[in-house]
Image 1: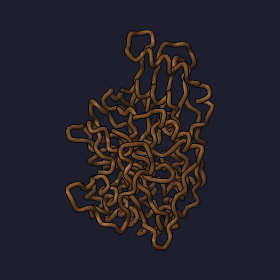
Image 2: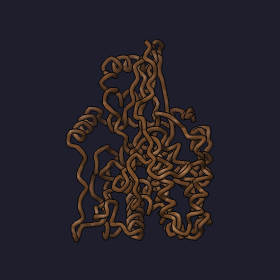
Image 3: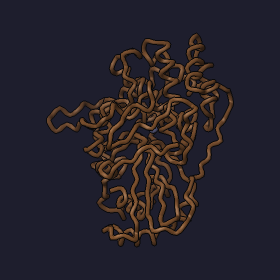
Image 4: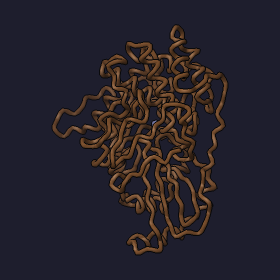
Length: 434
Ligand SMILES: [Zn+2]
């Protein structure tokens, strides 16, 4: 199970948005307006555009650079813009190498936003664009720093427009794993590495110096990327017998992605050479041409990779066997979207647990309303204003790499995605995770 780690207060989200009211209005308006349209490429349209959110939550933000435009050449150059521009260019080139025109295969322009919110330690694809925070400056640096982080988010767009893997349970872990796979292919390609030279670390360089972490995830040895008093221990698993069955983190997508990640590493090193010509090509074929569905599970994906393996069929079959997955075409997971939910019982405790996010880490905090904690009066008022039943009735809408919050407000529990937080719930989380 996933009682993985406790992340102390200085790791948690510190942001107090300047205007919670304005933020809530924006979120509501965005929800009512539905998904923002993805721009279609005209003949002369730029392949990508990078925007600057100016440390607000306003998307996409100010347009700062597009493909074909030169980088600013002065001391005031924005490193995050440079990093994003470099990485999105490389991601599109890799996509093209695999024979696809952008993520939708119709040449969609890729919209990227940097400097999202303040101290935001995450990155995500929201269905319309790639979004990056600057990190909290204490544990996490800029999320534009490691090229594979952008590759990971770009791949969520690819998955959305191909198999459309549901972001929950096994298909969710396949969604996560393919994002890591594409990120690894991108990183090794820009570094000119063979599979034997590569470090197989996801997000290497994301942690600031002094943190006991080699990166977010280790595809070669899931569960060993970090072990630090401030972060806890890497909770990833690398074999089906250790599968984490949980309602957190969209059904453990960032924990269980270690299983297909390790299978990919085993195939890549068995084939050797450049990953994008070996295992990467096989995984790509499985995703884009195999008969996979949104609910396909590990067994179905394994079968698809074996079909796509050509002369490497034996290496692929052996790898899946080593992680405990028996390939079976057409098998489908039946994901359960129901939150575990705690038994409602009157209690003076207000509790929040935040999971998910690109890093897949856990933060939690609680306050007993019967104590003299300085947060009690505000929390008491907030809890009275939240209609937990109404929040809980809405089915969770999983979104790649967004945070997931589990609240227990004096015995009434609900689960809600970062993108669906009400003004009150956001404030409660800010108070408890401070
Ligand atoms: Zn992801």
